[in-house]
Image (cartoon, rainbow, N blue to C red; front, side, top):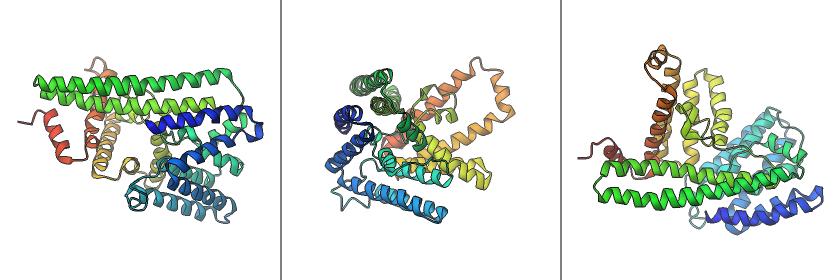
Length: 376
């Protein structure tokens, strides 16, 4: 929360100068502010981002073999990402296991490299690419917005009072989600409710409520910060992609992943699922590698690998069920299949998040036992 507040204050002068400076200078304030922010809070991340930005842009621009250049860039960036995800940077970076923003700007650069290979990115300057990677509003919390759309906004960016007003509203909604719904209702009041349930000896209900509150709070916090990032972007004249779309109203697990962390799930779809599917012609393998990478993006741990595997099984089971005669038979006897689907999907997501709620697998197993009434 504290770093997001700092970004908000860094963005205030950026927004001002981005509109009052001459047009040819209006892209620089965000780059300078991001550079200052990183130099204060994460100098190692600033070094990594600067070096990889220069390497990515100029390698792809001047390479005679675009295929080799893209493969090299992707391997290097992903290797740096894995290096820090695995914690090897701990001893040399003052206990910081992961440089700020690396999960987002690494995937943005890989996206840029692959789209350059596909020749889907229009002509652009280094300044525009620099602005894309050093875009302060989305630096810490995403989304992983795409460069072609960002480039379009650079070209058509004009002062728009309605857009500015919309940005202020999104920031207000974001803070309301984080502070009122997340910090107050889900955390303070939620913990009080769980403590009361345990005091009254409603052990099962306390565990059930705790698992729901954890998942809903994770959504509220993440969605709230995404709203703030989107709002700040609107104040600068940019429309970056939405990251959430009422995920708890999803009618199946596939629908859920089209609504939850949309920028990451669509990134995995475009750059992991489709390539593996095109090679193997097996959608199940594409889902497997997509979800494994999605789990690695969050954390390299057995908890997240099990979480990813649970979703792999659920997605594949859903697709098998959705294309079978069983679905038609069952729907004949269900009054409201959509709401039944929402109930099942919501509880699967909540129960899967138990795997990542606690790093201690013994505690995770105990939680499942309590939920299933097996803790005697």
